[in-house]
Image (tube, rainbow, N blue to C red; front, side, top):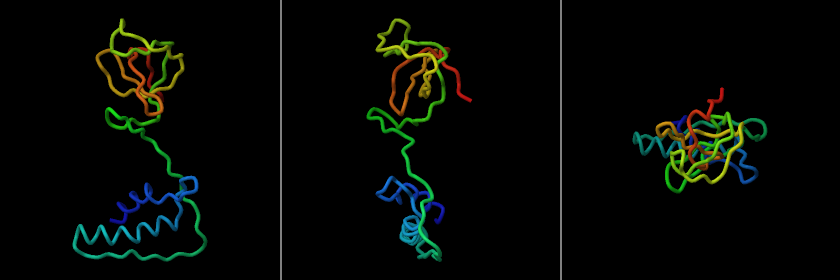
Length: 140
């Protein structure tokens, strides 16, 4: 229950200043959630012990790693592949499909889904379109 509450808190305990997660906010959240979780799950109330010494400090910065996409699941923002040559970005998985723009060699993208010899790619969590699979190299 404690681990679950900590993981949950890392998403909820950010302060209003720069999305910092601070020790005090984390402890406050856990102090409320652990009893709620233990009571609802096991019917037993557990209260975490809190012993604090020293001053409050940030333990991390909360940041979004997924983008919400209106027509499907969230897409991770981190790139997985790089274009090895300039390539037209197509609206459908076909060589004669309409192209909206060209992407330069070296563009870092995320491969979202393979459709035959084509790949739907995304950048910064947003779907861009299709490119041939052989135009991509997996990032190390």
